Image (tube, rainbow, N blue to C red; front, side, top):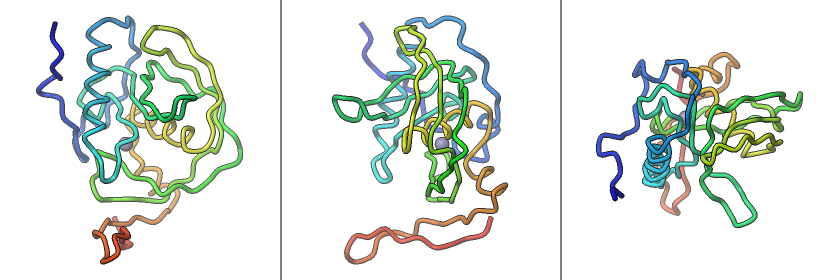
Length: 183
Ligand SMILES: [Zn+2]
């Protein structure tokens, strides 16, 4: 049995054009895909500061529609595999999030997103799930679905005329510091 991660898997950084691909649906959930999803979780967990909470297929150079994301469950926060996601409806109510991305290191931006969304997807068992997500989970889901359509949070920030910030390190008491920038 092979338990190693895909040695070549690494996160693609902007402006790499692979981040601009519009993904195609997964036709069949096979062992290869399940291994890829496991490898993506492992890779996401290596990002600790800031913590990686989601990773989309396009961010590791793949072209099918799936992502992994850390979601709250009854047993605590756990990574979920989300295959062929669709956003069925979004709340009118929005909230401004301070958003970052593993593919755009050290840059943060303000992005307004719906606070509640109804979604459908398949999990790694192939089961079709329909559910309503709120708050941080809704935010992560929207960010990752954008990735699967070749859209980055920086595009949303620009179209909404939001502010961008660069992470400038930590001050003497360990508080993260940011500087506003223009892109
Ligand atoms: Zn991202």
